[in-house]
Length: 258
Image (tube, rainbow, N blue to C red; front, side, top):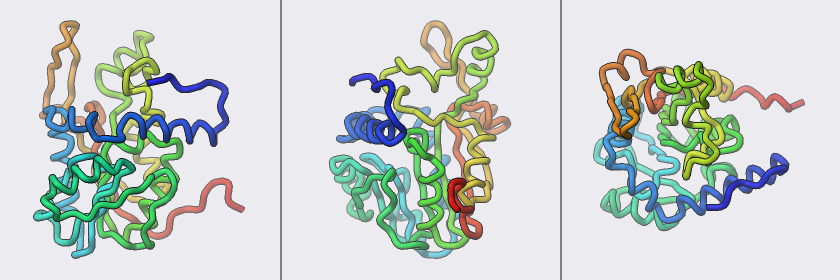
């Protein structure tokens, strides 16, 4: 994959990011390659449980950026499941994986969501927000399509894992901001737990809980030492941030509004 160009404006940077993500994830193969990895399997299971346990009412639930396999089992939900992705091939896989019990919608989350306001009781999105140029705009759209009191659950890689915190003190950059990594260079908006809470509040959400999948340490041999217990005790040190938030009131106006 080509490296991103330099000297671009914000509009063209957003367009380039959109094209780069489409090239990388268009067929779902890359996502299929890691969803069964223990790291992602736990992340997906924790996020799904937060949604199933927290969604209220019998309205539909939207999974945004579902890839070829939804995190949710339609049988666990009180209402219908809608799966959405920009990749048609991935959507076909997600529909097959759900045994036809999920409604697929092809969309580009960076261009606004093609749903009426208040359409969903819950919205789940995994490993998406770090890929978009304007995460607050994406969250405002999530706020708009959720019903009052609707539940948002999202996951995103943690910029401040325990190993990255120590590495930063030694003058080394956190893993999530490596522009030479084969896929992490697409993570243009990395988050810490505190920043994620701030951004959610800015978009009109009340954060309810932060969870993580595991606290890990990468050994020089390439082997990972991991702990689920530490992730439960200190989720802000874990590999993935898994957050539940409730839609409250109206989203605050954009900062550049009159």
